[in-house]
Image (tube, rainbow, N blue to C red):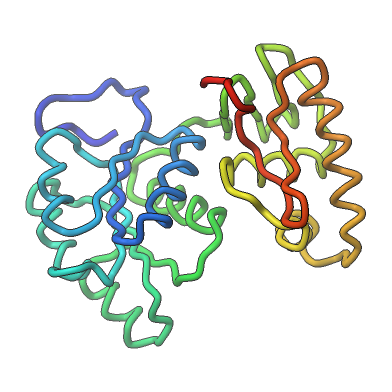
Length: 243
């Protein structure tokens, strides 16, 4: 775990991630996804705000958009490392051309993700960079949390309110996707693509497995899995419920 320039963090503290992205929707989505995955995050919408954040927040890795207002993300990499030496950086870029990716790597990025990206890809690349650079992922056992719901990928089970819930592999994959996108509405087509890998074109399979999950996750409790008619499904707190 990286030393904080204001003192040493506990060895078991969650890895800190600095997110620098000027699109508020993408920033909010990344923040929610990483928080649910066990990271501690701090967001900034431009280079100066990112540098100012380092006064009270020392990241173990930075996720930086190339196209920032004012100073570019490529220039920001060197400035961040002037404060936090050897800081790993994962670049986000809307430019898919080889020369643009090479420019990012030459600027010192450890890896890059091209927009539009999936949250799973960002998480996997983030974990890979942390391990490659000597840091660690949030926990040895991957675990997601939302409200009183927890999901353990290694144990293939969930728990709600501390009560264990056994899941099939497909149910686990579906719940994981919903948790990674908590607060967002995902369509049946998106779920088919991410959970079934495009192997099925029948959206009724999604309806069936959402029904299975509801019986296991929401039975006798305030529902977390909600249908947005004509659009898809979302994982969110019921009205009046707090985290």
